[in-house]
Length: 253
Image (cartoon, rainbow, N blue to C red; front, side, top):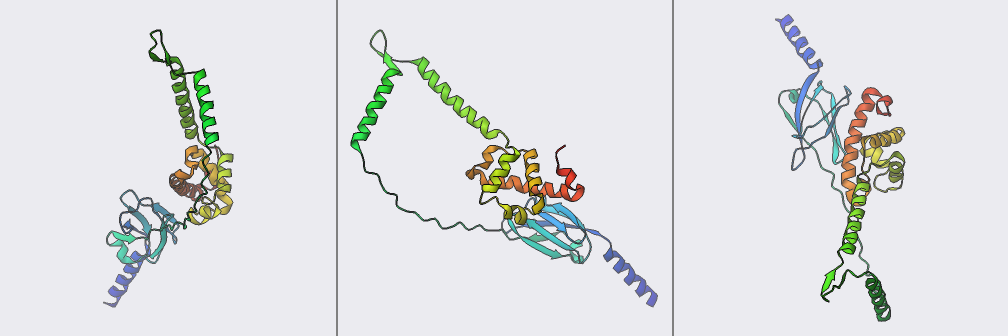
């Protein structure tokens, strides 16, 4: 009987020492969390949640799981045997950004200058008279100068088309590096603390982002969140390549 108890105990502890698979789901207070990075810090294993917030990762009892995302507070969990028995739900807290106070200052109103105003109108009238869009035909009825109107519309569309094409052109390394060096939001702290990029690999990461393609329009202030999402995805892929293959995997071919 004593030998049976000893063998049973050894078998139990042997099972605990073997790696098993944890299947879990990550929530915040409202929805499931997609693309959450989960790291088994003990076994050095990395995975991500899918669009439904589900994930699976190899672990042993007493391993430490770390849940990380730029949009959520980090969470660390010590693995217990109960985590292997059913699908476990992990809840993370969203980081709430507080906007700085905006002070509205009354602007000084310029005094209306009637002389300057009417002078400007006369100048515009002279310019219009040189190339009128509307003129009289043979029957003294007003007619449109369609040729001049077409030229004006064509010029306007060409400007818009060129501007749209320019926004879709990907930025090069120098332009992206200069943007990050002068931007208050996309600074070194964001790269090292939030995106987890090693400080000595920031230049390599910028080069990697250039190769992945970042459109010029994303550098505009109103597209800040789109650029941030792009950097988050790129950083996760970059860290995986860096961890699995080293620096060679992120350099240019």
